[in-house]
Length: 200
Image 1 (cartoon, rainbow, N blue to C red):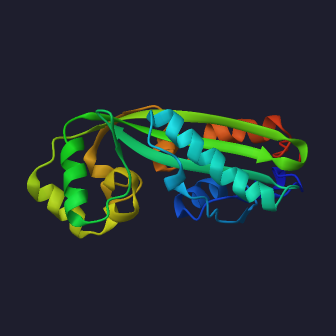
Image 2 (image 1 turned 180 degrees about the horizontal axis):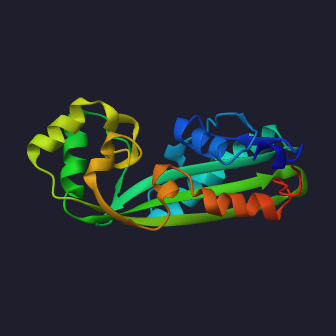
Image 3 (image 1 turned 90 degrees about the vertical axis):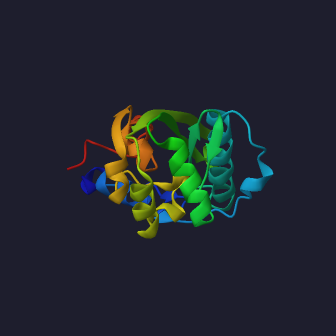
């Protein structure tokens, strides 16, 4: 659907290959400008507010440098029993996270911000998906860790990768768990004329 995209400049403020893939699959043309926004400047708080602040901070930082462009910022986090689970820094951390998620339902939150500073336009929201894991054996956890997949993923798993075998069911947006709620983002892009379905 690339012919349905307007000539307005669109920037993804993220180096995530998963977000890049999701937007490309939706037919969007865009450039990538990573944001150096300091995530440690945001104090941990309620998960939905936390990812919203991070997404807004990333988008605003890039939009300040590219005021004429529409910028998409996003951040995803996993929350289990009020614990925020980011990316594991070690095998021990990955093992602990996967053990915490085993046999339980957790939440995946993605905050997203779409803004254009020239117009003082900004749309910020959060998507939530409930994800239920199967009961994992120690052998399954160790096998998954040795694949290397958990180490750059929030919650130590990738639902779109080998980690799909961990997931019993989901309730909500699948693409949100991957890293971006595509349906919600595209709705805003269409509504604001950033994505024009009248062009074929």
